[in-house]
Structure formats: structure tokens, C-alpha cells
Length: 454
Image (cartoon, rainbow, N blue to C red; front, side):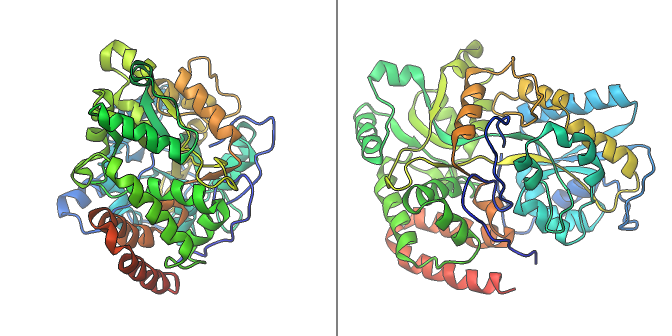
């Protein structure tokens, strides 16, 4: 298993920390790995367009047609990725075949995918999730790509793209904050004020209940959204340093600090939309869109559900605030802001074309295509033209840029096996029966010790 690096304090993209520095362009879908076996048809879909052909692990510097493996199966990001690849094909004359697979299937099968017949270039995540496969020799070294694109990014983005051996294995395309989203018209019509503290958020939730709204939209059918609630509560109550140590396996899940997180969450559960374990994030977003829910803690990709609704007016009506303060010692200094991007398979037979594609993916042009097509994302390149940003994108860049500490999200900041096989079922068990939290955390701690000792 990959080595879990230490996580110092300060503004960082864990688990590869680096200071952002002032005056730099703001850095930074996350989504989760799910456990369980998939059917043969799903695995076939993921490997059918592989470009490596099971050849040598050394990367050829040749050129030619390549395949591109994408986990962006939702309509908006899927269209955005197609526009990007079309732009590269037009510019380079190279042939690129896109292999799009359902997001969760992609995550579930990524390990066997990379060990089998993977695509030449594939979408993935920065930080630990990137280093995990680089350490196994399944990702290709693209340090030469960074020699050409490095000037486009802050040092923090380079750190988030760097493996434990000091080489680069990842090209960032976008980032987005996790925050509490709401419709401005609902708050204005009802006279709700944006809460600054948890007590204020509870008071607003009480008012929403009286108005017949589900105060906090919630859908955890796929297992990963609940991780975002844990992340923010832990960082608000115990601080960023404790949060990163806990996810690194360095502290006990039976500690008083962790119990306080779940005790606080228990007090919020009466305000959660009922039936959350049977609802995915897209369906949950529809409740916010239809003004049946008041607030929704999610990544800014939630705006995909608003982008074409109500003639575009729904997106203009969407706003967000950072999760309010709980412990004044930490205030609102931390936020989840995951980075999405691309890697190259170590098995590619067409490394020359693959690296050319990665250089294009790291360009301001590619990031602008993506951010213009998907209004739920922000581009990290320093020289990207942001004139087409919506008010929401501008606010996202500002909020992330001002955050003292930036986390990547639980399933990216800890071991993937721990996130998928332990934390997803444990959080869902808590939601089903919050009174059983002591037994749940005892089991989490036991499994953590076994996994991190491996």
C-alpha cells in the first residue's frame, strides 16, 4: 500500500501540502469510491477501449491514436469533456477515442482497470488518490509535461500533482468548493438570513420546517455525500489538523472529538430531508431546484442541475455560503475543495500523443472550455480567461482562495479501501440509527487498525 505522508498545518491540498502564497491565481466532483463487486458488463465497459494492450510498463515515446477514459457520465460534464477532446483533435490532428463510463463504476473498478488494459489517458483525482496508483507503478511519469505547463499553475497545484518520488503524475483541470447551497429567491421571500453560526443555522431550519420546507436537502444513496457532512463538521469542531490526522489513521475513531462530531450531526438529523439513503444527489438537487428544500451541503457541481432550468434563471438564483462556525477556535477557516484532472497509464503504447493531450488538458484554453460548459467548476490555470465566469464561479474562486486550509474530501484524503469499505457503510449505519454510534465507531476503529497496518 502507498505510504501515508505527514500533513502539516497551513493552507494546503492534502495530503501533499504546500503554501499557496498571496497573489497567485486561486487553486484548487468528486465523488467517491464505492465498495462491492460489479457485474461483468460494467467491467467490460470500463476496459473495452483500453489503449495499453497489456504491453510493457515502460512508456513509449511514439505517437498515434490514443484512448481517453472518462468518469464524467452526467450530461453536463460529459459534453464538456467532448468539447475539450474535440479541441485537441482539431489542434493536433491526432485521433482520440473517448471511453465514458458511469462515475461510480469507474471508481469501483479503477484498480483492476489500471492493472488490465487501461486507456492511455484517464480522468482521476489529485493528492492521495493519485499517489496511490503512482506508487504501484500503474501511472505514467509526466514530469516532462509539467516542464511545459508548470508556469500555468501555482506551486500548490504542482504539489497536488506530485508523487511520493517527486515526479508528476497528474494534470489538474478544475476544482470546486463544497458549501451550503440555497436559492436566493427563497431566502428573500421568506426573510431568512444566511447563518453565521450553527445555532443560527438551527434557527433557520426551524423556520423552514414551519414553512413546509425540508431544511437540509440530503441524499446519500451512493454513499459519498455523507462524507462531506462529516468532513465539514469535523473541521469546524476539531480543526483541520485533527481532521487530516484522523483520516491518516493517526488518531482514534473512538475519541471524544469524533463522538462530538456525530453528536452534533445527530442534532441536525431532524432537519435532514427524510429518506436520504434512497436518494442520489441529482434527485436531491431537484428538491432544491423546485424550492421544496431550503439548503443543500454539496459540491458546486450541484449547479449542473440548475444550468438549463427556468431559461437559465435558476442558475442565477443559486447561491451558497460556507458552513457556519461551530467552534470559534477554528471559525470557518477550512473547506473541502477537490481537484479533478487526468493521468496517463503506465502501460500506454502511445506516450507521445498521450503527453501531447495532457499538455493540452493543462492549458488555459482547455480549462476555459470546461468552465464555460460546466458552470459548477473553476479552472486552476493562472492564465485562464475568466471573463465568462458566472457570479457563482467568481464567488467560488474567492471563497477557496481565502480559505486557510483546503481539504480534498474524505475519499481522497484517506486510503481508498478505508473510505469505501469502512466509512461509507458506517456513515449510512449512523444515519439509520444514530443511537448506535458508539458501537459503529468501535467497529470503525478496529477496521482502521487492520487496514492501516497493511
